[in-house]
Image (cartoon, rainbow, N blue to C red):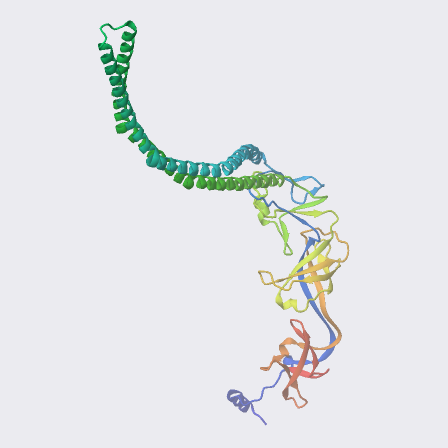
Length: 466
């Protein structure tokens, strides 16, 4: 018999075996098992068009008017009015500049075409002139100058001989007529004419000596210098032409190429500007409803749109700020599941959605897609089709219920009775007939947060303890 004092001593020394209380026991039973996943979802359209501007060059899209959030629109209705005065003025100015630019380009091309023809001709002309000037100098030095010197000297000699002839003739006439006592009139005329010839011969000799001296001392050296200068100038002009004319032609080619490129770029910029002008006609592509913000990655976000969409504001480029939803577009549900729910979900799984419009109405839904990779917040996008009519509209929310597992009769135990072993298996403490316990390995087939389904290792009516 164990007395109270003995029991106390055993408890203090740790020698008393642990006895399970009734509160720690669980009698294994078979009962229905159902695993359900709940997701918060948002109704989104199956079709929509993002409204944004993607300009190429223009950045000033000032808002002058806009439709309200949730506005019902007809095809062609203006969704966002944009002030186009500045861009229209810019287009007009660029069109005028383009006319001048085209004329200047045509002029440059004509100048280039002329240079393409005249440059080879000018090079040939300068080369020919240099060659001829060099040949002329060589001829003058070797032939022309010596011949001119000889001719000049011979001219003086000839005039000296002529004077000598005239003097001798006068001398003979005077001697002949002197022998006659009387000089006849005819003889007097002959003497006078001969004396005049002598005077002319003397003057001719004097003039010849002076002109010959000038020619030999001044004119011929000057002529030689002129030939030398002509040859040198022609040579320099030819060298200069060879250096500058091809360069000028190449510069003109590059100038025209640059002008053509600038012209093409200006044309492209004008075309882009005109295309940007057409972006200012922001109209409804059809009959439908307009929502502020964007629908992207399964979410409707209007935060940026609310800040920007106001008269006087400016549209940022490439930023969807409105979404057009065509009339009679069907709805779908967009939800996001965390990792702990992901394994239970699969494409084709059916369930129902409950809205705030009518919490007693179950709307049939079916999973149509599950993203393979997570969003930035770690959740996974789940798309669900809405399989019946609903009064819900885009942006409304719903609570989606999905039964991921259902067993008519299953061995289930509370999750906190389960122990995970080091090898990864699971076990429970089975209470034996003698009141002792032993670890019993079990196979877990499914589980909820609080309950697990055991397919091997336990039977109905067995008792397990914590």
